Image (tube, rainbow, N blue to C red; front, side, top):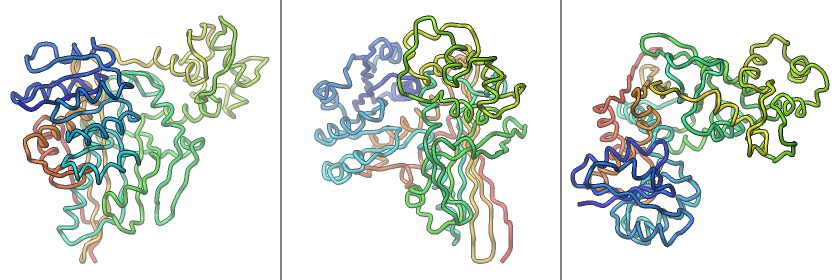
Length: 444
């Protein structure tokens, strides 16, 4: 019996834990600060148990790691290096779905010496994006070609039948992380030119991206996602003309977030206001309005008074006489509360994950465009697509490590065939499908 400890019992843990509990030779311990969440995940099967753990207590973490064959960290990323160091010290494998940070990368040599793998970035973005990209990149190389352009789009969104609010977005948990991501600067390569986008200009740089969803072509807004260029080395793409990774949102999101950022609603600095302050009063304070709020807001944001963006701000309640939520200390706290009130998924509604890669490749006698597209939906009253596409790749990788099918050691990401081929194959058997196309665009 292989023993697995899962740290964290948040929104994406369910699909992962259930997959592992379905493996008869695995025993799964779910350890969480809130033990009731862990108990809900393991209820029923005899090969699971739930424990309370304080993630700020390294000794408590190590006690659980020491008795395991593999640890999965679904904790906030700041805890991953601590868990990883404890895993290396105790010769225990580790899996996370998060990006490799410098503190994790620094453990590579020690992990190899200990004979363990620290597998990171094995969710959806990052994760499935890497695996589907590398499958095509390696196919191009096998055919004697080279990739000259790579554009990748990914977005977690409401399914079309659940897209019923003017911002085109919904949340299963706090919007804060999504909003903070909207402040990140971006860096990418486009037509041979390196482009830098400051964080406060991110939503000025969106384009229309068409995707076929359930047989219908739908236009989405796409904007740059952080620093794309390190992935040129990760993917082994030398001297491309274009290398770009972006985020997809429904139409309306980018225009509205651009103006919310301009208004100062993404500011994390605490502000002081008296008890009973309303949303409208708070918004007026932000722009020093003493007149008609909507008119002053239109002037401040350089919008027409009948702008759809102003309609969206009003729909969020930012012009209302409702009191600010208790505990809100900063503008982003206020916006987070307003969005969570208005933009939750209703029971039975589906979310959706879109991942679309577009490659240009050059061969000795031709040029081709190659694409890989995934459109996956949540299960009504069951797992969200986000939970499935984040949790299942990690769970499959855990099985492959513990059954000896993945024998790599050190700090790894899923960019090698030993990892991505079996993981993608099993994902497809579980209904997470990838449509790949190749088209000759020019004969040489």
